[in-house]
Amino acid sequence: MADRGSSPGNRTNLLRPKPVGTEARTHGAALSRSIGTFQLTMFGVGATVGTGIFFVLSAAVPEAGPAVIVSFVLAGVAAGLSAICYAEMASAVPVSGSTYSYAYATLGEIVAMGVAACLLLEYGVSTAAVAVGWSGYLNEALRNITGLELPRAVLAAPWDSDPGVINLPAVVLVGLCMLLLIRGASESARTNAIMVVIKLAVLAMFIVIALTAFDADNLADFAPFGAGGVAAAAGVIFFSFIGLDAVSTAGDEVRDPQRTMPRCWRRCSS
Image 1 (cartoon, rainbow, N blue to C red):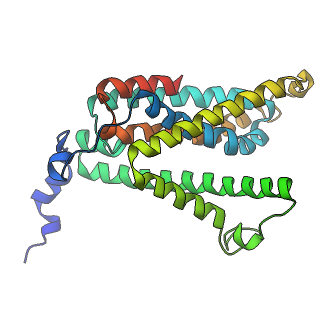
Image 2 (cartoon, rainbow, N blue to C red; image 1 turned 135 degrees about the vertical axis):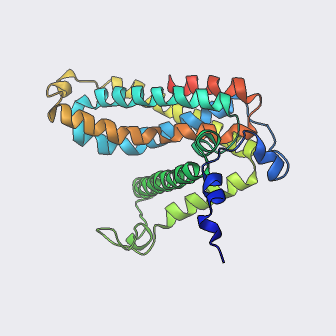
Image 3 (cartoon, rainbow, N blue to C red; image 1 turned 45 degrees about the horizontal axis):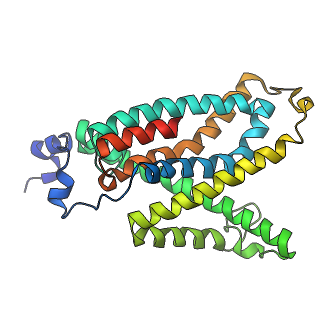
């Protein structure tokens, strides 16, 4: 009996691109287009602000010192160029699935499957990093406000340097986000927009207060680790821009995607 998996026809199918817009015809009714430009922009801004400011900065500063400012500029330029590419593809292929759909429509199924695997790994790693960072901040807030702190057993994984049993706050956070996403696209977009506005307001307040204690002497040894440190920090900071491609996953849920998504990409990249 012939091996169907190795037949020339199947190999050809793996390389055949998928026509744009076939998802709705082959998998049921199309998704409701309920997301506008502002909510879509908040998706990208929220993901970037969340990981970039609150979690990545503490890892980037030891790499570059005060020159981390330059690292942010370099990472921002790279992310902006990437956003331009996403804007073009999102306008040409206005469907959900992000780079998976783009690869499927242009390079074929087998390439799209590899891209999908990379996307799953990307989102899994970034989600875990943010959830673990949030868990640490929650414990610190409890310590400062109430004087109490959570036991180590529920703050760390068994394989950490200071092992625990499970990072329970991180698991709870991921579970709550999952329930919100299951609730619906419009509800999650609205909630995300509210949280992003609050975060931006807090950051603006922090900047204003921090400027009162500005000391130029802190910039004296601007790049203690040279160009290598700046480049290494830029690579770490670019991790914070992972959330930008989340914008392109909502192609089937955006009103007038050919105009809305490129406009959103321009706002996020700026």
